[in-house]
Image (cartoon, rainbow, N blue to C red; front, side, top):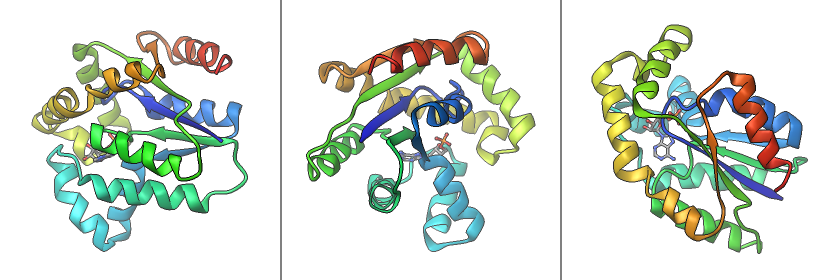
Length: 190
Ligand code: AMP
C-alpha cells in the first residue's frame, strides 16, 4: 500500500488537488478536517469536543485524529493506498503514524508538500469562505490563528520528512491544472 501525505499550509489547495490524485492512483482520500466536520454535523460526542477547538483555529488532541486515521486504515478495502490530507499536523502525530504503519511493516511513501506564500494563504481562504461556508474560514482572527498554528506546530514536519528522504515540494502558485501537472509528474516517479 502507498501512504501519501498531502502537506501544506491552510489554503494551499490540498482539498482541491486531492480528488484528481485519488482518482489517478486509486487512493482513499482521508481528510481529518472533513472527518471532524462530519462528526460535528452528526452531533457526536467527538464532534462536540472538537467543535470549539476547530472554531478557534486550534488543533484537536493528537489521540483523537490518530484514532480516526487508524480506524480507517483497518476498515477501508480495495484501494492501492491512502492520501492523508491534514494529517499529520504535529511531530507527535507523524511519529504515531510511523508506529501505526510499522505494525504491518509499512511506511510513508512520500510527503507531497504544496507550498504557497503567506499572503496567498489569506487570499485563498477568503475566496474559499465565499464558496464553502466553513465556519473556521469566516473570521479573520481564526484564519490568523490557523496560520500561526501551522507555523508553530506543523511546519516542523518539513524537516521531519526531509530527514527521512520523503519530502517532495510542489510549487502551489498557479492554476489548479498547472499545480496538478506538477504533482502528477512527481507521483508518477514514486
Ligand atoms: P482542515 O480541514 O485540514 O483545514 O482542518 C480544519 C480543522 O480541523 C483544523 O484547523 C483543526 O482544528 C482540525 N484538524 C484537522 N486535522 C487535524 C489534525 N491532524 N490534528 C489536529 N487538528 C486537526
